[in-house]
Amino acid sequence: MKDDHAIFDRGFDNLTSLADEIGEALLCPVTIEDAHHRLIAYSSHDGQSDPVRIATIIGRRVPEYVIRELWSNGTMGKLNESDEPIRIPSIDGIGFGDRLAIAVRRRNEVLGYIWALEVGKKFGPEDLTLMKIAAAAVKSNILELEMRNRKDEKEHQEFLWQMLTGNYSSVDRVRAKADKLGIALPSTYRIHIFEYNSNISEETRRRIRYVIHANPQEQIVLHLVNGKHLILLSGHNSEGFVSRMLDRLGPLVANAGAGLLSGDYAAAEKRYQEALSVLRIREKFPERCKEIYRYEELGFYRFLPRMAEEWREHNFVNASIGKLKAYDVEHQSDMLRTLELFLASGSNVKKTAETLHVHVNTLTYRLKRIEEIGDIDLDSMHGNVTLFLEMQLAKFVE
Image (cartoon, rainbow, N blue to C red; front, side, top):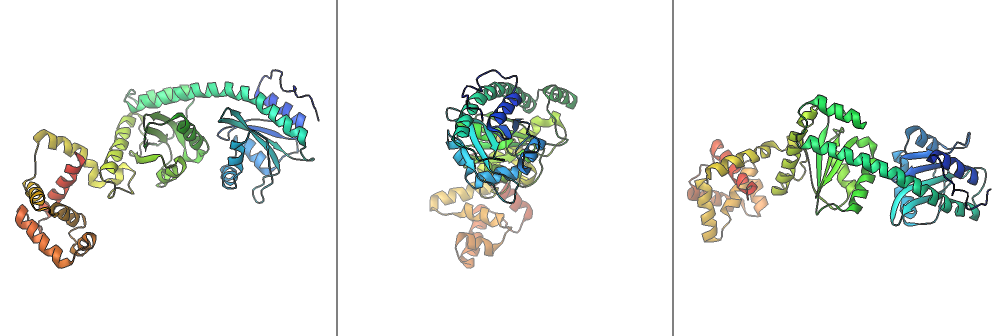
């Protein structure tokens, strides 16, 4: 064991050389990861490894099942909260051997991790001291790497924003730019928007980066933050994508929506506008659209934005709705809401009565009064569809 605490002060050409030096000092295999568990460097210790370390090296990142286990058993929480090295016992069933680990940090921000596999000997107090010294040495290297990554991230975000704002007129131009930036675009994609309660803070941005990079299976190729909106371009098309992301991003997300699945990158602006429409419609109709996140699932609601343009142009008010609204104001009644619930139920009297908590006979009488007051024929499919659509439109334009 080397006991020179200045051992890592000299300059290193790269983090791999530094990882080798740390491994030689500790007499064990060492891996260095960034804050998102992507492999940055590892020491060369032939024949001394375990399945998790081998999988990390091959996949260039810690396997997802290992990350889940380390979070669920509290290891990552302890590691992120401590300035000291943490002893981590082996985990049966996943090929994870005894380790010593430390978070590399800049003040309260975790920049990465050093993991030392305990093989052939037990780590002593000197090893814990060396791990702290190693973390300080790795810090400057990771900061330099992070600066380059942030530069790349900014260029990627600008590229996505240019697509979303219609700056590319052809797919060839999009793919040429992607190739120049080293971005592998999937054959099909969706634009997802996650709307937060307020403008996204730097702390929340760090969480977003962690979620994106720690879950490569979600195929999030590009992302950017615009005020309250986190915008993702993902190649994943599973129905559960939005729900999984909502769970990972946390309770600060208030709304979410996605545009149509597309293979045309020149149409990214349209897909973005579709996702924005989903956000607005979910906000206007929270109960009816509670489980709807994709544009194609909106049904007739996706027509409301264009219907609103027609409505504003002609400033048209449905006479029957106007009469019922005036009657409700004068008599403190609930005729208009009753009509809406009745039509939304598919003209089901029993279901509507249950929703309103009234007797079926009471509802039947009320429906007759609605027909009389509004000059409405509730047996007319055309009339019912028109009334329901116009009531939804009125809510949309409020």
